[in-house]
Amino acid sequence: MISLACVGLLPWRTAAADVRRTLDYAPAPVDNPLKGLVPYAGDVRDRFPHSLEFNYVPFAALVTDYEQYDWTALETLLNAVAGRGHQAVFRVFLEYPGKKDVIPPFLIRDGLTVHRYLNTNTQPFPPQEIETPDYGNAALRRVLRQFIAALGARYDGDPRLGFITAGLLGTWGEWHDYPRDDLFASPEVQAEVMDAYEAAFKTTPILLRYPAGERHAAKAPNAQRRFGYHDDSFAWATLETGKASDGWFFLALLKGAGPAAFDKWQTQPIGGEIRPEAWGKVFDADPGIKEIQDFRTCVEATHVSWLMDCGMFRADAERSPERVRRAEADVRRMGYEFHIPAVTVDPLSAGSLALRVEVENRGVAPFYYDWPVEIGLLGADGRVLKAFRGSGTLKGLLPGAAPRVWDEKLSLAGLPDGAYTLALRVPNPLPEGQPVRFANTTQDQHAPGWLTLSPVECR
Image (cartoon, rainbow, N blue to C red; front, side):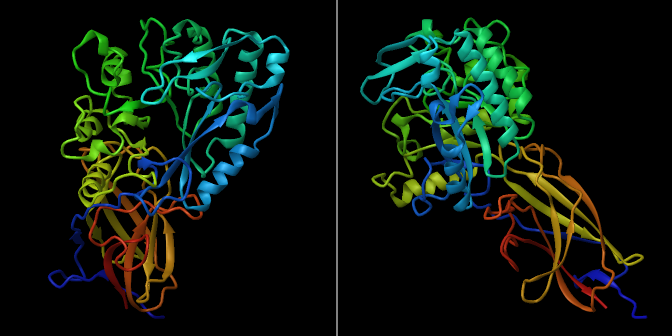
């Protein structure tokens, strides 16, 4: 029999004692999964780092008849995005300025009324024609409920997905028909759509455009529901101004909807879109437009994880070194940033190695998925020689909270004598996706995607 003794190697401690090893901070990558700036779907990684891609999908492309669906358009989108190692955000819409034939013809055939008019709420772009369906139509309401159920049955928990914005109702699927508020879906119809989403999706987060409390004049209450929110006028109509006319600004709506909505970020994600007028400029020291609100203040106030943007991704976008530098610093602040301040490696006992990993969140929001933790022993060449499924999770660790401690016990039976590197990673369930990378100097030190914790020796 060859006995093994496996100890953390630090020169000032003995093999008989626990070894608590401190790890230094370093900024995490800007393109960590499920956070940051989001371009329209396409390969634009050379313009600004990102881990998510967004696109719209017209309702008529997916719904061909009553309870009959063609998923080709969505599958094409998800496969293309996943092929680049990214997760997708998408929204299905029923009306969009300048677009026609997005309402399924079979509904119009069966008597659905469609209102056609000039939509003037298209700034900074010119007004365009739009087609708004009668949301009170019984057949349309039934088709919406059935579609959401089918969508959830097929896609809830799909690793190609990051987030879904609820869509379906209103201009761009943004749950309003301003300035034709008279044409928007009633609170009863809104509640039906939310009921359907809650029943159909248990894993993939669904985000709504507007927070609404019990006494909102036009929106069905959603503060107590299991949805996140998306602010699509970010850094323009985000922070409160105190003006009655700005009562629709995102923070004003959050506060007006009550504590459950205001604290929603702790359990449900916040996303959105940087206002088009602020694209790119929002990252300048002097944006040059008085309506643009301070980006970092908006991030910290909303706890936003991701934002659609064209300002850093268009081919003709200005990307001066200073703008890029400021953008990287501000975008890194979005969502989570996990740092491991210390790891404790215990002496070997009965063939098992115990360790305690301390994890803290230095970002502004938690991680909303329960991705598995892996612990590995790496060889001198960085290859994983033995891997273990960890018991810890990143999900729900709030910024500023005390470090979460993962207690792990690793069986080293059968491991040859020698020197190893103890490492950790949180893999992306998407096969080509990047793992969560930590804000530590030893991230990727010995193997891509792995955080080096400590050298160990088995003898």
